[in-house]
Image (tube, rainbow, N blue to C red; front, side, top):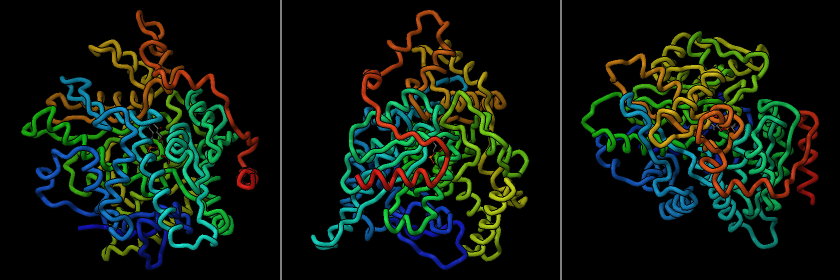
Length: 508
Ligand SMILES: Cc1ncc(COP(=O)(O)O)c(C=O)c1O
Ligand SMILES: N[C@@H](CCOP(=O)(O)O)C(=O)O
């Protein structure tokens, strides 16, 4: 069954949008996120049929279920996928490694793309998609008619920004504006974003937090006149294509695991996902809902723990201030994509499974979140969330300790980045509660340690023989510090100031 029709999570209207519409629109005009109206379910035999496919072939099979052939014909989709993953350093794209055979913990390395973080898996594809759809649209207009352009506006706590920039640099008819919180991204992340020479790329360092940047981006999308004039596009995980592209590695790593442990091992499979904006783990939710035999998706948070608190108490509540932690990419107060999950749960509980009624209810919860800073979900929704997910919160001290312990214990002195360490700490804690070893854990390694030098050094500097420069830092990243930076400073988290800069740069 294919599911190529989309709607907004907050809409109470009849809606049926195409994949191309939702990719190019980004955020729905009512402030909701686009979701496929139904999640395709796979035939029983899919594991046998898919288990030996390579990453690109699997990506094709999965994406085909969510993209109609009218939007992208087969041959074009294959070309887009091949092009997107040809930039990865590993032929497997996202290899699965054994981290601790005894505790059955496996590490899914997602950082072999151009910017050394999991975002590349989706953003290399999204960059090519924008180019593809713009070319398609511009072929339909005459030479005299103004060509359609897109103005991408994104918020980042460090990784989305560089991955979006590397996915879109130099692309025809695309301008990119990336907002990041001043002083809250690592030096290498800042260098990756600000040293790119392509003139279609602009970086804005905003005095504020990631949530401030995300709010500004959402406000820009909500400004219909601005959107009409500049065709605003999204690279954050509000863009459905981000979630879709991330589904592949849940399937692929499941099949890799079967090869590592033997398909007859019969144990449960749990994915452990360092989480912030809930985009990465949401792709796992779609994979599970499609039929991938996953026991639990485990949310691993840092001390900004809205998701962990929701699962424990059933209340979705923003805390006062975002805490600056050792895992800065996850320093987020409100997890944008959680809304998509809630929409499915709300709809499932309605007697008539009515899309419009689900939109209406979710809209009221989101308004409450905006006005009161919290809402309490229906008990049935919390129960469903607890059957699909589990969670754990990891402190800075535990993050550092985990980087050190894994380095000491691993035969090849494996160096984790702080975000991946939060996942590993969580995997270890769940494995400890399962002495019978009934489950295998696939722990997502979301970034390369080189991006977080200060934290990795804090954990390992005292260890004899350890050298960041020699053992961790790739040559390609070494060169960044010598390059010239281009940054616009925004001294206040103000949407007007950001819009002014966008208009000024586009006029250049
Ligand atoms: C390295 C790293 N790990 C984990 C996350 C959290 O992922 P998500 O926001 O999709 O939950 C991010 C940011 O998104 C990240 O950059
Ligand atoms: N951790 C992210 C924050 C943005 O989240 P996104 O997945 O919605 O783009 C980052 O590194 O920028």
